[in-house]
Image 1 (cartoon, rainbow, N blue to C red):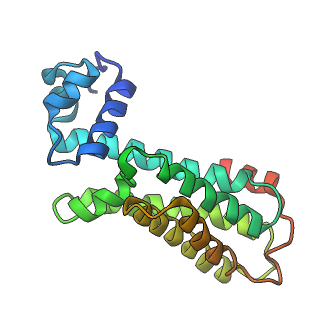
Image 2: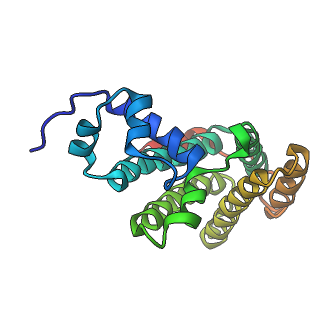
Length: 210
């Protein structure tokens, strides 16, 4: 059994997330994180073995938060499937345009920069994307007719892909108004036969929590 951490791990990982997100993996050192978090280099290496180990711990924490953000946002949204999708995509746009220097998403940035060198990045990102899709599918299912599970799965994947694309475009400096316009195109793809049916959001939230 490993020794208990002699530092505030949450504070350390949050500091690491901010530095890796803003500066990138290659331009962030353990010393940088040590200085910001106030944790000695030796303690960091003892806990995570290497910069790679520290990054993966921070990356996993970030990915879990992103999945939670997506699922909680869409499942808490009132009204129809169309309204819930609009709520989610608007929240994603507002979140990404508010980031310093439009820095995008640590998960998406890391897939492009690191998945070839650090296979765990792609694995964690795939699990995160699947968790996001499940959350969206739970919400859409509350409005979809019986027998539409395949359609729900495809639409859920489409919505998450759209959200990730909006983040990329935000990083390129596309104005928020334009991003919202693009999001509305995705909202319109929901089948008219059930897109405006009011879903049981309480039941969906319970299913996600369980």
